Amino acid sequence: MKLIQRYLFTEFLPVCVVALLFFVLMLELGDLFANLWKYLTNEVSARDIIRAMVLYVPKCVSYAMPLAVLFGSAYTMGNFYARNELTSVFASGYPLYSLVFPLVVFGFILSIAMFFFEDRVVIHSSAERKTLVKALLKEEDSLSNSNIVVRSDDGQFVYSADYYQDKDMKLFSLYVVVRDNEGSILSVVQAPSATWAEPNWVLDDPKVYSYGTDGEVTLSQSLRGINLTEDPSSFRKNATSVDELGSRDAKTFIERIRRSGQPFAEEQANYYKRFSFPFTIFIVLFFSISLGGRFKKNVILMSLLISLSIAVGYYVTQMVSMLFAKWEYVSPLAGAWFPVILFSALSALLLKFART
Image 1 (cartoon, helix red, strand yellow):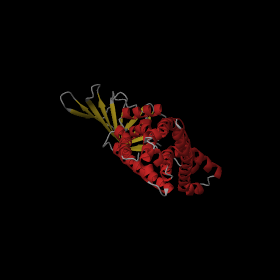
Image 2 (image 1 turned 90 degrees about the vertical axis):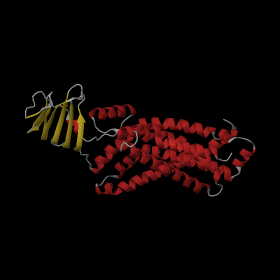
Image 3 (image 1 turned 180 degrees about the vertical axis):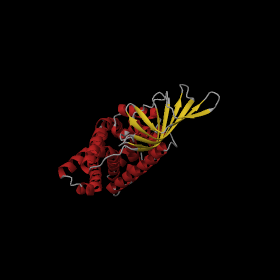
Image 4 (image 1 turned 135 degrees about the horizontal axis):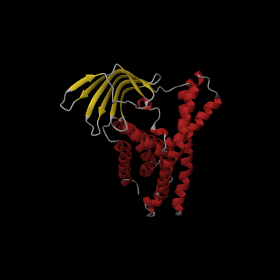
């Protein structure tokens, strides 16, 4: 690393660290004030509140790191221009890409490190915090579910129910489609309700519509040869989220949802976002390099304004693309990576017209 590169990096690093601490503090205070009335209502002790805040720190770091890098690099480049150091560097014939090369390498390494930090630290601390906050606030998740469609592992049975009551392990307005190995419909079972009595479901007043080879439909109440043994856990609302699982466990979890026939686009998009989000750091560096030399006055204010504007634009774009993926307007892969590709193209375009 050359002297001028080392000088730029040593100017950038302290600003980035201070900005990271500032943004983490803002996120912590925002979460604290949002939940303070709940803590006071449930008479939660200060020790437990501090513990919940400590467990929230890794997630705050994950959110704040792109903003801190963006602000730090934009402020450093703006400061160089305000002190005429950037002009001197360019006048000497030293190219911009050589000057900022250490920052780019740092951003790439930090992006990779943030993925492992998210996968090994953030996920576990967030899950622990969620459990702690629920216990402190005496909140319980209902596992009852509505509008359920579940397919058995072998694909022979497809269950459809209006409502699953977890407390009594009971299904309401149940329809079961029975299929053969080739997927052809053999019969349809209908019942107002069904109750779990291990190892199978007991149907109330069942009606079985059987399809003959000649297309004739017969009605009976006999369940002979139809053994409904799907575990009640398949009908419960998913209390677990991909955001609370490691990469390997998340992949297994999504595969299990897919096999059961339940919608999995949102979970798969969140899984892909885990890989795309760390590269936000790499992208914002290009934005700051492109825009950092465009202002000479009010460097701190302009750096903060640019950082927040780009961050808001990126997160809004990501939110919209993830919603499109959830509603299956676009694929989960496109929903997770579209903001990264779009803002990479914009940063490259801005870099083309950057001061050199």
